[in-house]
Length: 314
Length: 281
Image 1 (cartoon, each protein chain N blue to C red):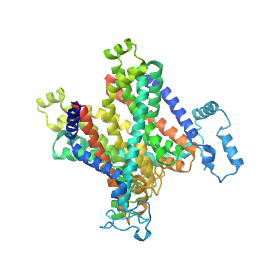
Image 2 (spheres, rainbow over the protein chains, first blue to last red):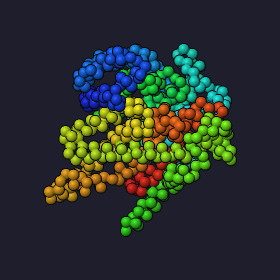
Image 3 (cartoon, rainbow over the protein chains, first blue to last red):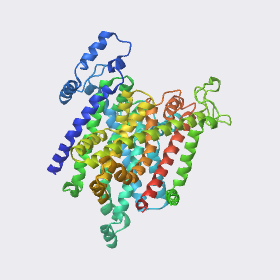
Image 4 (tube, chains in turn cyan, red):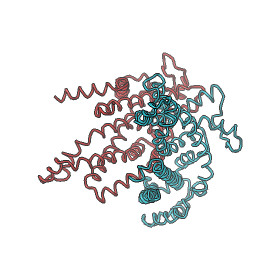
């Protein structure tokens, strides 16, 4: 197991270097002068020159990269040109709502997808299977911003059951917090539950045709006992992988969900930074999100090796 | 003979579940895009504030928006942006991905290592976050979005192409071509590329729908086509503020977007089944 972790960590190093290079070059892709783009015509020449020097634009590109990397490895991801707050400060203030939203969405998606995946696999080609597969297709093809607006229209605007653009931290006020996160979490969880339902259904169908399942049936075990004690545990392995890999989808979904529901999370921070043309903030947040994504993929790889020993020795 | 093969391919593709429905909808969307100036009942840009927020009726089948523009007309014109975005961004991904995958798979060694680490690095970014960041630096507008989505789709095709080339380059006919003195570019173009087409076509057909969704997401956030030009994502965003008074501003383009992506998925499944019959069983 230790060797697997070491192998995966070593494979991550060149990717991380290339990712930092990509994020660093992002600001240099801005057509024309990035400082002009950030400050516009409102600032005087002195302010522009100061920012240019602060960002190191007066240095050759490779010197800029080495300097920037030196700061990054010390935890200095730069600072916002608008608020002058560091990227880490910005993200640490915004990470909590995003994590709460992601956990809530994940819980909702699992509560929907696991029963639905089991029922559609055990009742193949029945009406409930058709319903489950249609639901999965709906969740995959329906844009999450349309789902969000549909939910706001029905539960917020028409029925007035749930708040639509206020955020309360569930740790401060559990009832108001859960109410404020319900619609965003359903929005984010629906696409995820569609993917998990599809994965679990196909994985369970494959497992249910295995010899050991047939043997369990031949021993006289009931259908549910076979699924619960024999098939489900093995069928859940690909689901773990999919869950880990969906981190990127969750973050992408969080950008739009937080934007629509005005949640003060990291997704909203990215959108605000993009519109404020606050490129150092965009750079820093994108780098942090990507490192988080790489770490989650690494964790899934290791977890997968732990769950399935064949991977460890491959 | 070729005509008969094509006919068999179409029949096989249409026999997949809902592929016929998907094909009809996609054909309808393409016709709408092509004939938008002829079939749309009103001007998509011209404002008529006297008719603002009119409910759906015989005069305005999907109602009007806050500027009095006919929503159906703008949905029809929006098909052009969506199809251009879906087809062009996937085409960029296919071309760039195939070139990278061909080079990595055929020459191998350090070129393969370098290109594949590059592909891994691009895949390490969450797709929408990468598209958003690229769209932000390249500037709002369709061009920036197309390039951003093209970059997002490139690694998928590069990996797919590399895998195919790794298998094909060991075949006897490639060795034979090399022994006959064939240049690398000629072997790649004449013997390798044509034999890698099937999975690329399948993946491309399945990606178009998701590229349309991604473009709509970026337009919704304000990075795609800018108002007053009609794009489904920006139309939905504009309707957000009028959800109570004029929900049709959101649900008209929303339904068009959902139906198009759903239909493209069915067509993609059909093409996959026709080209690779094993997936049907």
